[in-house]
Amino acid sequence: MALLDDDRLFPVEKSVRAMARDLYEGIRDLPIISPHGHTDPSWFALNENFPDPARLFVQPDHYVFRMFCSQGIDLDTLGVPRADGTEVEQDPRKIWRIFAENFYLLRGTPSDMWLKHAFQEVFGLDTPLTADTADEIYDHIDACLKRDDFKPRALFERFNIEAISTTEPALDDLKYHRMIAESGWGGRVISAYRPDTIVDPDFEGFTDNILKLGELTGEDTASYTGYLNAHRARRAYFKEVGRVTSSDHGHPTARTENLDPAQAAELFQTVLSGRATADERDAFRGQMLTEMAKMSLDDGLVLQIHAGAHRNHSAAMLAKFGRDKGFDVPARTDFTNNLKPLLDAVGMEPNLTVILFMLDETTQSRELAPLAGVYPALKLGPPWWFYDSPEGMKRFRENTTETAGFYNTVGFNDDTRAFCSIPARHDVARRVDAAFLANLVATGRLGMDEAHEVARDLAYDLVKKAYKL
View 1 (tube, rainbow, N blue to C red):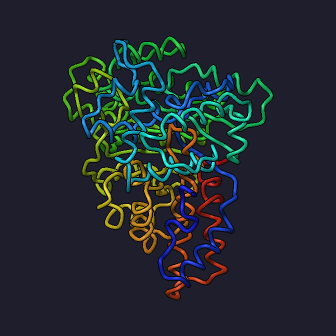
View 2: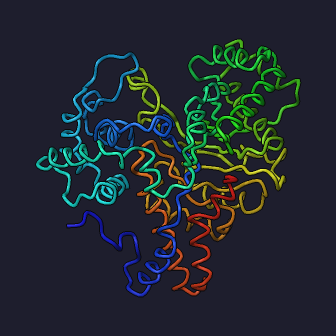
View 3: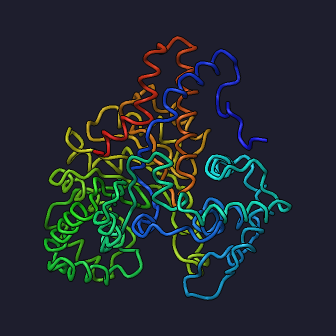
């Protein structure tokens, strides 16, 4: 019995469902462009077999273990590494059994659909995952993972990925990207410049990171001018070695500033001294968003802003397991006022692309769509993290299309660490967009020929254009 319904996510009314199915069939097999995410470049550089089902499906996927954690399941038992290196569960079969026993907790979430898609479409399974079937399914997946056709590069090609972007911190040496480029393999794996460790004063080791930045670039990063020049040098390095087309910025707010050079230099010294207030630290992050946008005018990188997450909400879990363990929580976000300094500086630049990602849905129709619907530099990224879901995608289209249109958005990106979820996530996005477009056709707001064109744009063309891929 199939794990997935062929008509999932399509409208219930038969004639509209038929239109959605027709639109989907026109885009389902288009190549995948994955312009932002967190897959490990070493997978593609080394091309080694994935070690076991638990380390493929459970340990890298914070969507899974955050839900399990909410039900009192200790992350130690799932093999999630501790920050201090303390021993955690190492037996992948034991981890998998816990995963299987609790798989029902994911019902109704996008993770349930993504995982079932991977089980069925990637591994050929048609048996539901339960406590009773855990070992059988583990053995099947484990046997597949030992084969050459399940190595990372083979799956990359099988998934029909045309290009994928990983994301590395600004101080990374990009050795795996260099290895990929030198290997002769034709898969396009690029990086993205993520400077959070050297622009966020609240990041652990911030001052030491600034010193390392100076050592890497030969610039005097104790001065603001040298610090900015060091960024320019690292961006150039990322373009050369990582073949980047974008930078990425994960800030707690959407605040931007556009201080004069003397004020900015003074703020930098205050931040560097460790005596900056919370407001001054936030102002510095905001100043750096504007500085990055100005640098993008020179080097052509697309600027991505992922704002509005209270990251690492649990201090105890941060101390125990480190960053990115599912404890980032959406927060209210002001875009209209906070983005104004950046937009005053560069918002009318037609050759700049600033892509906004949001976790505060209340801003979509009130702030984001009106902003993107008028400023040439602004584009709206797809629903992110908690809203990377069928209903979240549907609400996004409903909230933004009438004001910003389709062409001030940038298609879909999967933003994932879980490799096998990539085709599943893109499939969900294509189905949701087909359903949305079918409803526009059914209500006389779009012709079917237009809907087919828009469907292709949303699935493929817009993302290539926006990210210069």
